[in-house]
Length: 316
DNA sequence: GAAGCGTGGAT
DNA sequence: TATCCAAGCTT
Image (cartoon, rainbow, N blue to C red; front, side, top):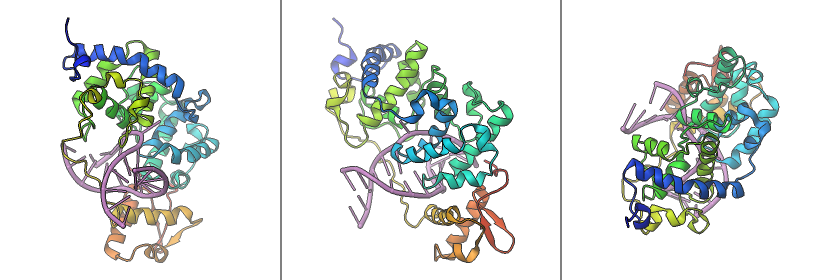
């Protein structure tokens, strides 16, 4: 009678142990997902690959509740990549509203243009082609390939990393930056069957978002709590270095946000004097505005006026 | 690998 | 009130 890692509360060490634990998790997690998955618009069949891609851009570091209304308006206005590509990038920035990180709007516009030019207007299916699009990194490429096209990819976002850190790693939180070990574990846990792998990806994310949350996980509602290495070990508190919370007040980011808010609301070009009113420290204010121009989020005009960009998006 | 990049709700 | 946190990407 061998004692398994799951039975002892120890984290699995070998690839075989990881795969074995994965096999025990697939059923409970996907069954839970069948019953508890939220009815989100980008999960409906009519969303299509473009809808999935738009949602993934918007959801990068932004909560679902704030994305929902902007997503709906976005898809009504720009139902296909070609529709967005046909408009100035500044319109994307304006429609982005207060979702935050407005460079994402610029990159989504640039991605739409690339899809139009390189892929005939259809969101590509290949992971490598997705990854080559502006604003698409490892996570988003895997997410679109998996959620939109049903492919088998390890989809490793902050939710999944936390679920795996706890259920398998026995730790409260994953490392600050994604590690090679995490990627390897995610691949080891991925079901062989393609449709099941796609469901697993969505289900593990949903579990992390709804139950295995960062602050206060609801283990009593968790379908795998009886197998959770972290819980079996007594839910030990995080011991590693604290994750640095970035201060916001007084930073360039705050100034950029204020400047861009004025430009989003403006109908036409905005005089320098109006922008000057949003922040009283001139050096930081100028640095922030220069940064927005360098990023392609703002276009300087003659006569000290500024507006959201009408031309093709800037680099990056 | 670390830093920079928005915004607002929850605790 | 201050801190944490939210489906990351790029340089």
